[in-house]
Length: 230
Image 1 (cartoon, rainbow, N blue to C red):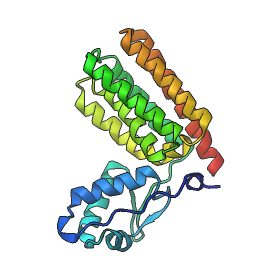
Image 2: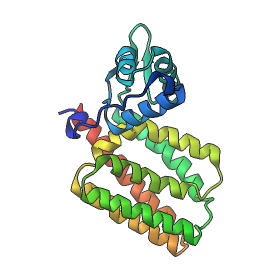
Image 3: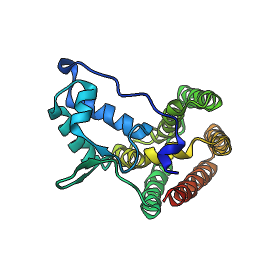
Image 4: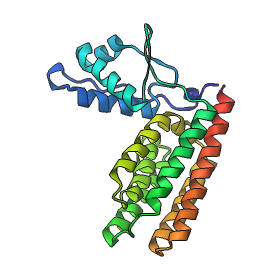
């Protein structure tokens, strides 16, 4: 069974009128479709098909694919075209190593959240729990990502945050396949709760420890998932 076979069929791309489309909008939509699993790892991204689905010309599609290639979300093969890249277990391991180093640097330099910021983190967690209870995979991906980046935003290192986002973008398609079983989702809820407790108590050591535990469990589970899908 391939990784993509484990997910429910996502919604088709929304169509746009040609005059309302821009490279930026097409880039954003293609990025979301890849991250949500609409396009699975290894899939050929045909410019003509995408342009037809979005009811636009090929030019903004081609420009969007070039941008996504630069970001590592899409790969380009000469004389073949654009593809959703496959990631090996070793490559995923390296992505998580880089994430760990960069995210640890942010955590070592975060300020403690204000009451409003902490309330927003609680709200994100609440929406995530609801999405998990209803098994709404798009919402699970959205809120899980929002939870982490709400914490990352407590540090002013914008350049590092952008690089972390790029690494998340590269592995989101695989992460969606992981977040589709009750044991793993329950583990995510529990680990997020531990992270929130560390923020509330302003315990820096506990925050770093809980985030490291959360990071390690996600990495090992993804590597196993990729190996099983080969």
